[in-house]
Image 1 (tube, rainbow, N blue to C red):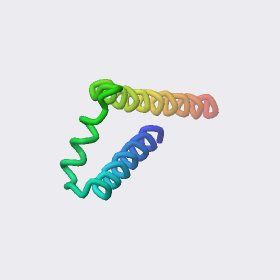
Image 2 (image 1 turned 180 degrees about the vertical axis):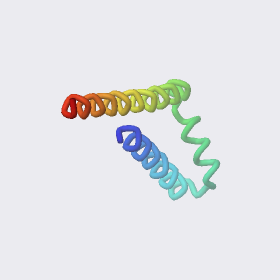
Image 3 (image 1 turned 30 degrees about the vertical axis):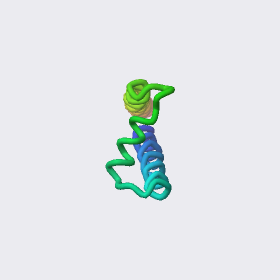
Image 4 (image 1 turned 120 degrees about the horizontal axis):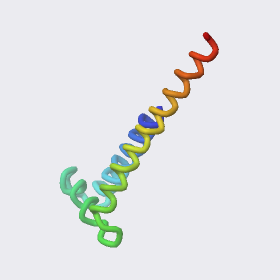
Length: 79
């Protein structure tokens, strides 16, 4: 569930940003998508990509740990 929420928020922010860029700059979708990646000069585009990948991996870890704890809790109540 955490992974789903992460993907939902990350995708929604991207779509909102691209939509606003299309509205403000009157350019195509792909050009606005490329501008988002290239515009992050201060933070560095690579830093942002690795942070997004790390966030996704961490959300998977959290989901796995929650699933594992839930599974162990069911086994304790049945045993």
